[in-house]
Amino acid sequence: GGPAGSSADSAGAASARPAAAVVPPTSRELWQLGLFSAVPFIGFGFADNLIMILAGDAIDATLGVALGLTTMAAAGFGNLISDVAGLGLGEMIEASAKATGLSAPKLSAEQFELSRTRAVKGLSGALGISIGCLLGMFPLLLLGNRKHPIYLTSEEELLYATHFARYGVSPQEFYALMKHARWRSAEPNGVIVEPGRRLPKVLMLLEGKAIVRRHPTGLPASRYYEGRHERGALKARSTGGCIIGGTALVDPAVLGKPYPNQVVAAEACRWVEWDTEELKGTMNGHPAIEAAVLQTLYTDLLQGLKHSD
Image (tube, rainbow, N blue to C red; front, side, top):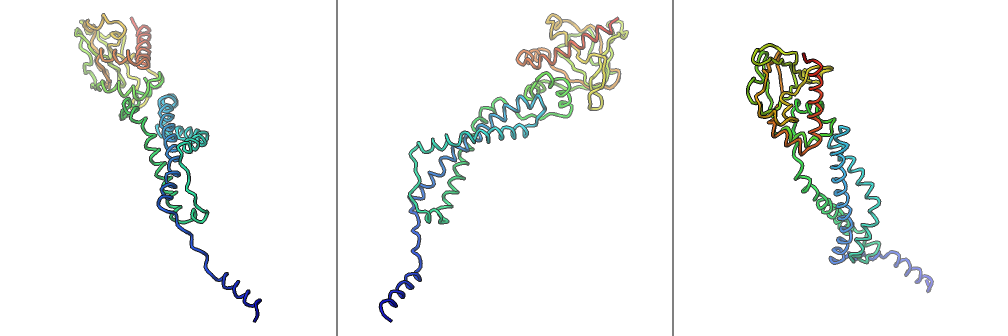
């Protein structure tokens, strides 16, 4: 019952008292924490999207064409490059954020564990990286000026794969070329080219076979034209040429002269045609398209020599 008992009672009462409540951060401290958390993530988001878009576009325009990668595959590789680059840029971005003069508020460990504090930190990081990603998308404004949506029919896809892709013609270049093209068809015995008239266009026969009749006799010549496609696929072998009127592309003097022969469909034919002057202009501006057309034309000329009378 003496002083020792009183001392023990006092200690028990002290331990029974609830711990002091944690003082929540002030609004100013929360704003300071939000800015400190958001700014580095703006840098991370900006660098991540910027590198991914530029790298993905470069891969799409090079390896995508050469190896047939899809746009999504190119974007995936671009994201890989962006993530790897982010590992090296992390310290630089954090150092740049500190250089702005921002600092974390002086909060205790207990204050940092408060739900309000953790929510502000998490939401600020999410907002910062969102702003950074949106800012990092600015290259799309520049890339959008030279890229257009590419919608190719099955015929156009086959034509691109068999006549243009291997010469380095990009899908965008081919799309621009096909905007000036016109598709035509003819039934057996249908006239494809009339003799004695100026031929202001170049025709590329894709399906079917057409014979050449000498003008004015109408007798068949040994030369004929043959499409490289059959039932939506590339033929295993074709011996006839497929370009009609292509000489005008390499000899301007021919352009103004009447076409000397009649070309008639020996079977159902399908071809694509361009205005000669428009095609020449496109070829002058796109070396890959020029290489594709001229190589096909030279192959036709060689085949014509082999089968000439």
